[in-house]
Length: 114
Length: 111
Image: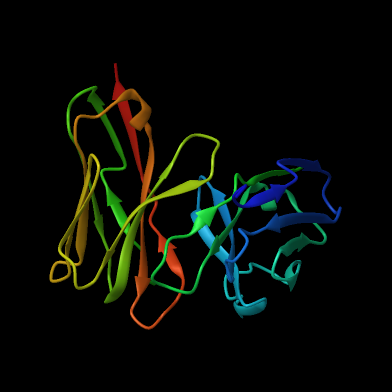
């Protein structure tokens, strides 16, 4: 298996632009997580899905952020409009089942908003 | 909110020495996990210990869990330069499903 796949790996955009991050989880995993990592705040959970259904989006910082999982093999995290403070590394992770298993992380997308 | 807190924040040792990192948390947990992150990479799962377990081993890794003190430790024996990375503990609160990560310990192994 190729592991969790994220694209793009790097994104540089200007303030106000729409940004879409993509994630393909490991085949057979039914839970998917979006995280954001910054030096100041560390690793924060934004939202997670189980069986394609959003379970907890309490970590989504603002209405500018939205996430979808239209099927078991694809998820997107969208920021519209983007702001400089959104600059961070965004990770997607997938897992089989729920709490008692390990999560497999993708390589991350480094987002820079100018 | 419950959050694992690692101690120390940074640790620098010589190759071959043992490295010990600690994690404390605040509420009852289902399990505690340790992850490693190399610079510029995603996190890699190292080991999971359940609340009814006290110690687990995996290769050169040894993890202990003391639920009465709400703390865990990760021991890396015979450290190697390749062990240089940040190490995070993460907890799953009892009744919850999501992982909450600590701020991590940055470990540097000097050759």
